[in-house]
Length: 216
Image (tube, rainbow, N blue to C red; front, side, top):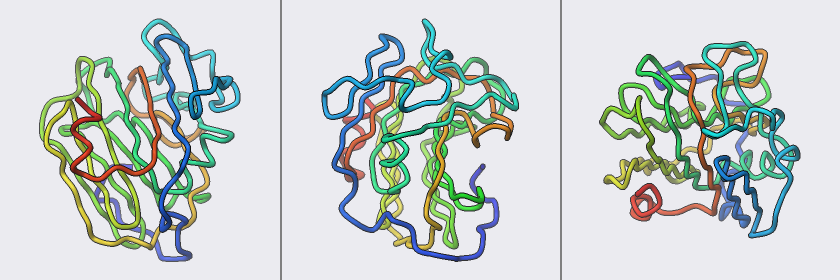
């Protein structure tokens, strides 16, 4: 959900305190090439709606109960560690309200990590502590690329090669993450605004200073 929503009560520490994931994922929805550590993977093994991929990328439906696309399998296993950098190239269909590019959440959908575009590009983690970072600008039309890092010691974001915004306040208060989706919470919760996910990379955590090179 949007930053500023009240955090939920602390229950257990998340799994984001180690050195981060070791795998590197590349999902090119435009050219339909998907790899883990350079080896091909089947799209059906990592998302629940592979049929949503078309000429413009992975389609997120507009405010639809079946609009989001859940992440599954080994890709989900890496995302729920809560210690990684994600790079997403996207296209928002229309300037409207909020589009949720990526959301990772606990089993009860109380605590979450997200990257979304609204009146700015935003990234956050929300547990007993909420950390929010953003890049000012109008990103609700055209093609843009965002790089976002989340670890227990950092959230940082950079869009289109711009300077990174970072928060280094420690946050070890997330419940264990359990689900992830493009477009919003997993169905049957309604998606947010329509958009296309063109490409996505998931890599070991990169410092805030390294994010502009990834988003440029």
